[in-house]
Structures are given as C-alpha cells and as structure tokens.
Amino acid sequence: MKSGASQPVTFNSLSELLERLDLPAPQHPLIAMINYNNVKPGLADAGKRFLLSFYKISFKTGSFRGSINYGQTRYDFQDGGLAFLAPNQLVEMPGNEDHFDGYTLYFHPDLLSGYPLAGSIHHFGFFSYTISEALYLSDKEKMVVEALFQSIATELENRIDQFSQDVLVSQIGLLLNHSNRFYNRQFLTRKAVHHDLIDGMHAYLSDRFERKVSLLTGLPSAQEVAGHLRVSPRYLSDMLKTLTGKTTQQHIHLRLIDKAKEMLATGTLTTAEIAYELGFEQPQSFNKLFKQKTRLSPALFRENKAALIDPKKG
Image (cartoon, rainbow, N blue to C red):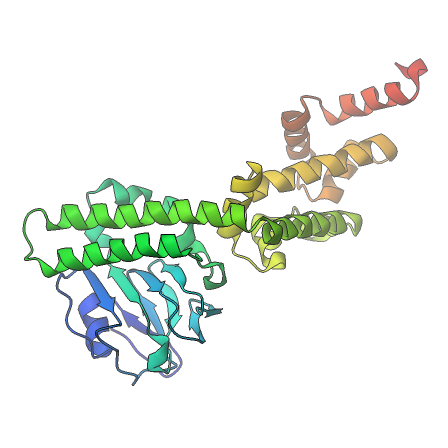
C-alpha cells in the first residue's frame, strides 16, 4: 500500500482496504461484501482518494439524501441505484456516515481467473461509465438486485470449500447479466434524454464540418464527441447501439459520408481536397471509406450526380 500527501492511497488487497476502513476482515481473500445496515466504516480518511486494484459494485438503496464523489464525478444517489468501478479507478472517501447506505461488493480480478467471466467481463461496458451514468433501478429491479447481493452474502458466510469459488463467480456473473438487462431498459425508457444526446451529437458534427475544424485537428473521434456531450465514450456508444443499432464511430462515419456527398455534388474541390478538409490524412483512406459506405468511388459518385443534374452529361 502506498500513500502520499497529494497522491491517492493505493490498495492492492481487500484485507488492506477493510482494515484501513475499520471494517471486519474479509471472509474470503478475493471477495468481500459490506452491508452498511450492519457496519459503518471509520471516517479517518474522509476526503481522501483511494485507488483500488479490484472491482467495486455499489448498491445504494436510496434511504439517504446527498451526493458523493465516485470515480471522477459527483453523483446524487438519492433515488438509489447501482454504480460500477473497474480496477485502477479512483474513488473518494465520503465524510459522513449517512453517505454509507446499502451494500458494496468488492472482488479481485484473481477471483475470476480460469473462468469464462475473466475473458468476458470487459464486455460489460458499465464498468467504464462515469458515475453520472449510474444504473437507476425500479422498485422491482431493486428487489432482484438486493436478492442477488444477499445470496452472495449468504455464500460468503459459509465455510470455504471446493465449490465456493464456482458459486461466487456464477453469482457475480448473474448480477452483471441482470445489470446489463436493466441498463438496456434504462436506455429505452429514458429515450427523451438520449435523443437529446443524439441530436447534440449530430449538431456538433455538423458544426465541426461547417467550420472546417478537421483541417487542423483531423477526423472527429468517439472520445471527442463523448467529451463534448459530457458522457463517457462507452456509455454513448452502448446507448447509440441500443437505440439505433450503430456505435458512435459508425454515426461519425455516416455524417462524414453525408458531408462528403454534399461537397462532391455541389462543390469544385478535388477528391483529395475534400478528404483533407474532412480530416483524412490520406485521400486513399477517404476513398476506401466512401466506397465501403456507398459502393461508389467519390469520382464515380460525382459523375453520377452530375449526370442526374444535367442528363446531357450522362
């Protein structure tokens, strides 16, 4: 464990963390469940930042009012919900016992070693979301999640045997799969909010092309668009995939092609000049993407468009 005046306090084991928080030692070396209805952590480190080498899932049941720093973002948990942290992300220690509500599950990546979940956990994109994109739960969903947390707690109370790790990993997998389902529901039920994001993305890209920003900065990226919209790149891409069937990168490509078609049909720039203005480093890359999306080369598209405008040229 390392510490410093301005550096986050790093924890490489669950026992180190729980001891620092004045909480009971973990019942298993690689996984720990904290039920804040039964115990409250010490507040000696209030306001300090922790860097954890393991996964953290917080289930806030919404019995208190207030906001905390979780990861890099301040989040209001007053309605309850689930929040996820992957290893090597920062979390700030709250300064009031009232902020500790519900349950927190910690598990070390080594717990998953040798199991399929070790290779697939990165597919659960919500570990890369910011806390402002936490999972809001309906009352029925809260009951499902609470039952899953309690089942993990019950298993941890049993003596460790040859089946313990199998059971615990399968329970974590079930919790993550339910969370995936509930996030999908959240994308669909909060369409108004998400369609505002989609409109904002399109407006940003259109303005970017009109101001010819790409000449200086290159092609727009998913990270850039997400940053402008103040959401995490993974959240934006997952939301777009659910609602439109296309990722952020695919939407960027579609907007690029639409702008390229407009420039080819109405302007006098050469294909290479259009490519550079849109942000491509090489015209060949532009030609390849354009043909992939339209089944026509830029030159042939321009010829066909001219022929439609003036049949004598056809």
